[in-house]
Length: 356
Ligand code: IPM
Ligand code: MG
Image (cartoon, rainbow, N blue to C red):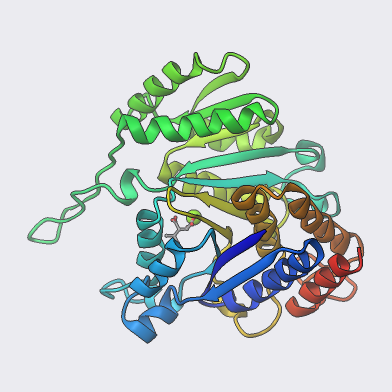
């Protein structure tokens, strides 16, 4: 099969972790005889430095003509300390989401037996937890207008907007995934306060009838935040709006033991993007210490979701599990013993795939 991939490494540790992901992707393509066409492009702070735009037109065109986008991270501390900077790296990410129509961000939360002791939660609470957060990604407060300040600068406002169509397509997607899993959907909203949430709930209640084989649960977001740490095993597929999803997925990511382990897929109208959920981790950039596993697992999601190549995805996942069982891991998840570098972990995994 011919696989055309845009490679957007971005900022901070982006180039290092994406490099390891590419090693795994190339090993898989060799093994299964896929013809890989990969091309790099700039995004984030590096794109601002080179082109004055965090998501240059050239990058957008490359993404549009690719079957999938393999993405690292964006963000640079020099912008965080300067709230009045006119162009920010994050705008590149938001522009990419909007222009590629990446309406659904999928973040699977699974536990790894060898990491359970690293979780802030008790082992019996999380052992076997396995759920999926589906976050709406192109609507809500992130994109709603008007947004800004009053003339005197002393009042600020954001607008949360959702249309029936936006809610409909993501809620249906949640049901489709639930049908392939444990057949439960939790719709997370704040329908006791927000008008947009009441629309979400109304639309979901209508859609629910089309999926009688799936159990539906409605939950307020504050309660969901509590339940994620109290009883994570009660969730199967959770679906929610953009801002709630942003917050809940960070919360969910730590229960598995390390933020460095979680991949994500953003399903789009034009193409889909695969990236680790952690950020650009600037303190580690260039040190060859960052954990590449979330990025390598994102490559697994890419084979599965963008190309429907399930076996290839599973082989990558198995290789990651094998590296953890063999304790070939970076310092964030290493035991007292030796920690390996980013590239050593990447090489080991590519090697494992080559020798299968
Ligand atoms: C995420 C990030 C982004 C978001 C930031 C970097 C704009 O936190 O992907 O979750 O808020 O969506
Ligand atoms: Mg976030």
